Image (cartoon, rainbow, N blue to C red; front, side, top):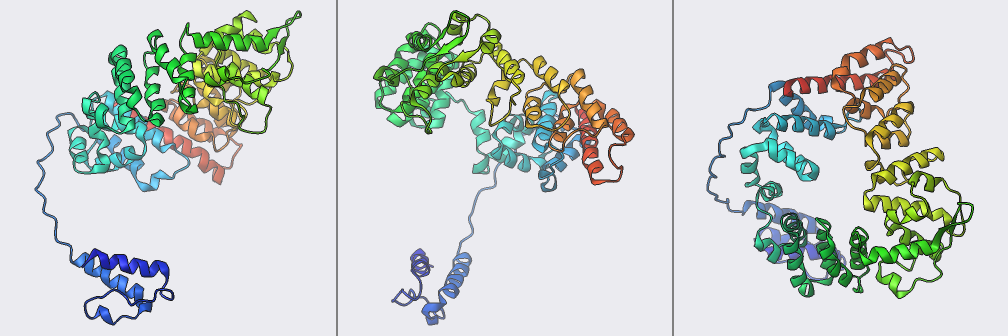
Length: 493
């Protein structure tokens, strides 16, 4: 059956039979008797004919998978993993399914177990969607997983994980993401060689690709990289200038940091009584634009204030020691002047860029003391990854009751299993039924699974909920999850 026939039928369907003046394509009897209005019948008949006319594909039987001598994970843990991978468990709101799968795979990998072969297709499908699980699936999948990956293209990522990323052919002919990965891998091994390779290829690279390739210099960034980054600032592409500026802002002793420091301290100073006076820049000149300052704000906010925020965000945090050497004290100083309100946003962005935990700790305490929530959209939650974990635990333990987005954001960054102080706060709130439904999954995954019996005892003793009510069922799912985790940990310990 000719592919051209199908194309003609598709044209008839798209144009419409009323407007299509010619007859249906010439077909063999009895299809040639169909009227123009019978285009759907013709399409159905052609579909059947096409399927029936496909010759069977001959393929040699693949060699069997190599043997894997590692032990298979214990049966109880394997059964729970199978249940977690089942469609019925996927949408269960009472359990953080993917987190529990990750925990199970991590425990199995540490003990040198492999998963049963029957679970490999589901795990490979899951890791195809959830890329953060790929290293774990590769570790517990073993030789059988690699053999399966060689049979299906969509699982090919596992084989790429196993190959040497520093293949010269990848740099020469690979797609952009693989070339960036190549450059980062080479930076880890030999920063100078990677920089030289990029400089040699720079003029021949597509301008739109240069920003992504330049980002690889973030690995082992050093003074020798300043020349290439300064060269990138001369580009007309704002994305490349922004990337170069981000790198130069992280490079100690760079001329870029000196320029931004001078701009920032020209706009922000201390007055005679110790208050912070803010005066935004009056113009955004070509030198500022070259250094990555975007002249137009993303909304209708004041342009000078927008320029000031970007300057502060790109200024090294150490520069503010001239105003106050203590970040906590500086954040609490009174501020006035046009643009004073954007200092916090600029500082928060700088903390995030520079990965400064001292400033992040001070910023967290200051933000909370102002009665503001450290949760989206009001605050930059990415700073929580930099706040010392004991500080987050102290806050979460003291404010555990309820289910605010603030607590959830903090719990996301607390160490697990939760330290004793936070665990006791959670158990107390559980016994009082004072935890909202959206926080319960974090309790189920944050508590040490050895506390499953204690959690059940606290819940059995409470009179805050009816034992047979729907709310009780939601709370008891926490105990169920802890019991599952306890069994898995016991099997894989």
